[in-house]
Image (cartoon, rainbow, N blue to C red; front, side):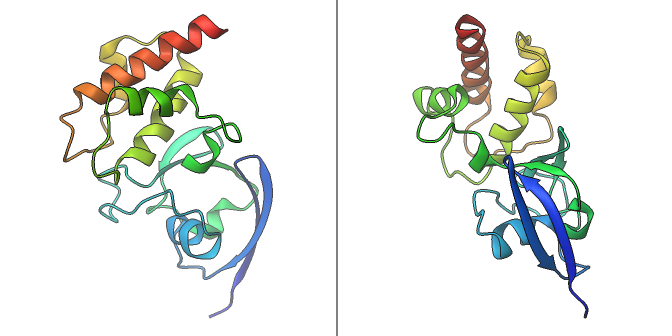
Length: 159
């Protein structure tokens, strides 16, 4: 099958790749570009483990074709930290022990960062609603919610 040439921006950097027209964005990120932080949980868009941002919107990369990324601005978990400095969300996840097996964590971090960019002072209900598409089998969610709320507070104080 003919490969498709795609140019996009990933985590702020211009990227070009070839992909099969049937290949998902998740597979392109992991297998072609080596961005293995994005995880496959279900492969059907039900768990959110593969969440990335595409043009500022959270999407399940297992449901999007790599070819559809042409011209898009994509954000993955690898783009959350600032060089060697962890993002407040990442630090708070560690401080609150808001992760266990780690399969869901990248998708939750991407979705939570997107929320805090849109709403720097979310209520707990808003955080729970925003992260409802991200399933976690290990933590029970409370530590995740507290980590996001704590990160939001720290980010507001810093700005």
